[in-house]
Image (cartoon, rainbow over all chains, first blue to last red; front, side):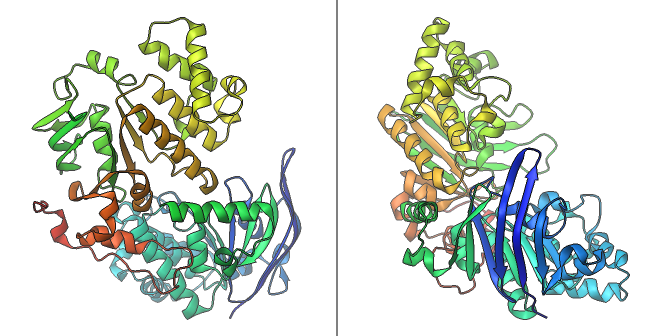
Length: 249
Length: 279
C-alpha cells in the first residue's frame, strides 16, 4: 500500500551546531521526492532522523499519519527501510548474502524465509544461487542490488535512498536506477532520495527540495530544472551550475 | 615536437595477483591534455601510479617508458625522488585525505617547493602565496595560515593544484581531480586547472570515470576496459566512438531534461578484453 510521509519542523543539533533548522516537507504516497544540496547541507541527516537512526531531534515525522516515535520498532522497520550510499561499506564482509537477507526476517519473526529470500533476489534481478555468495564475490552493482533486496525483504512502503548510486560507475548506475524505477512501479513505493546529481534527480524524482546549511531553500517540481522557474538565488545558482556543467561537458 | 611521455606495451601485475591489472597499454603524450577513462577497476589509476613509479610491490614491464630524458623503467629511487614533485606531479582525488591534516596549507605548499628548489623560507612563502593567487584564492595570506580542515573541498583542491604546479612540472597527472567536489565548484576548479596547464604548456593526464568531463577538458581520450585500451579517440570525435563499450558508457549517463525511459544498460561482451584491433 502506498503511504505518504510528512516531516514537520525537524530540528537537530550536534553539540553546539544546529545542523537542521525546522525542516518541513510532505511526500505524497507513491511519489519520488529528491533532496539536493552541497555536502554538509543536512540531506542525509534528514533521512537518519526520520528513520530514527538518530533519535535526538525535535519536530514530528509521520508516516501515513502515524508518528514514527510512537511506532514500535518492528512496525517501523516493516514500513520504512533505507538503502545506503556505499554497497562496499554497507554489507557485512563476512556474512553471506543469505545471512544478510535472513537477519531482518529472523528478528522480525517472519516465517517462510527461503521463499521470501528467493523472491527478493528475483525482484532485484539477481540469480537465486547468489544467496550463498559473499559480498566480495559480487560487483558493485550487484552489491547495491543486494542492499536493495535487504530493504525490500521486509515489504516496506517507504524507501529512503541515501545517494544510492554515487559510489557506482555510470554503467552500473543505469542498472540500479532502472531497477529502482521498475520496483516503484511494481510495488508502489514512496521514495525519499538524497542525491547531489541533478541529472539523477531529474531522471527519478517528481519533486525535490534544495538544501543549504540545514535549511530547505526551496521545494521545486522536476520541470523547474529545465524551465528555470526556481526563485531563490541559491537554487538558481545550484541549478545553473549543474546545467553549466552538463553543457560544458 | 618531442613527446613528454612515451609508453609502449605497459603491463602491470600487482604482487600476488593472478592476472595483470594493466595489459599492453601504449600511448604517447605531447604538450596536450590526455584523458584516461574507464570504470572502477579498469586500471586507469594504476597506469598513473606506474608512471609516477609509486607501485613498489607491483611488477611493471614495458617495451619503453620514457619521460623526457629519463627511462622510467631503469631510473633509481634516488633519481625518482628528484623527478617526482618537480618534473612530474600528481593531483589526487580528495583534498580531505591528500593534504596533511596537522600542517597549515601554506606550509605544505612551500615545503613542496623547498624540497626541490634552493631558496629561503621567506622566498618559498612568497612563491606559495603568489601561486595561491593564481588558483583564484582571494585572500591568499589568510588561506596560507589555515589548516586543511578549515578550508572547503573546492579550496582544498585548489591548494593541492597550487602545490603541484608551483615547481612548474612538465607532466601533471590528475587522478579524478573533481569527483569529490560539489557540482557548484567542480567546473571552477577544472577551469583553473585547465587555464594553468595551457598557460604553462604542461602535459596533462586526466584520469576520470566521467566521459563527458574528459570530453570537455582533454584533447585526446584513451578508453580502458579491464586493463586494456579499447579505443583511442580525439575528444571531439567521442560522439562517433566505434567501440560498443565507449558508446554504452555515453548512453548510460542520465541527462537533465532527458526522457525518463529506462537507461540503456551496458551489455558486456567477453571479446572486449581481447587486444584492440589497429585503428
